[in-house]
Image 1 (cartoon, rainbow, N blue to C red):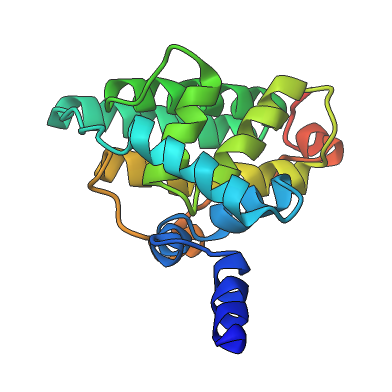
Image 2 (cartoon, rainbow, N blue to C red):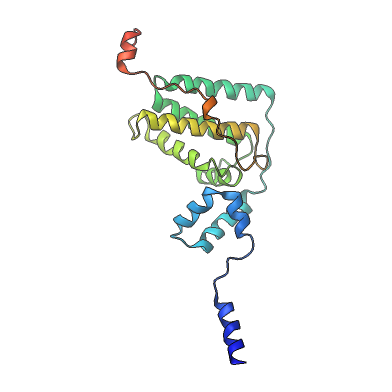
Length: 201
């Protein structure tokens, strides 16, 4: 009898993960691991944070865009990619601004940036880190850290999120999209020698 009591007490003392842990991992993907790391390995704290994000932002509904609005957004992004050749830092700043505006128009919160990032993590978890990186580099400006190849990669990854939000708003987005970077043509910035050869400054 004593052994049974000890066994029961031992079972009750074991840390439980609780229902929904697997579903949170599947939904958030790499963002789940990031949350656990941010809480120093405390899985329960990470799950509470992610569950709160779901509670706050999981019911967002997409605001439709007209065909003309979509064309305008696509044209603006193409101009940003073209500008990157001569002004990488400025192009990233414009990309951050355009993506923020698109998120607002599609129904994401715009009262605070951290709320917008949290909502993106719920509906586009595989692209939210690209969103954070874009914002950090855009905030640093043209004189900030990061080589041109790093900036180019950041713009390519942000383009994946841009396309996902443009094609699918909240609750429409899938778990992920195939890597589209092979079809994206963000040219590397021209070197000073190239600019001189072509008559540039």
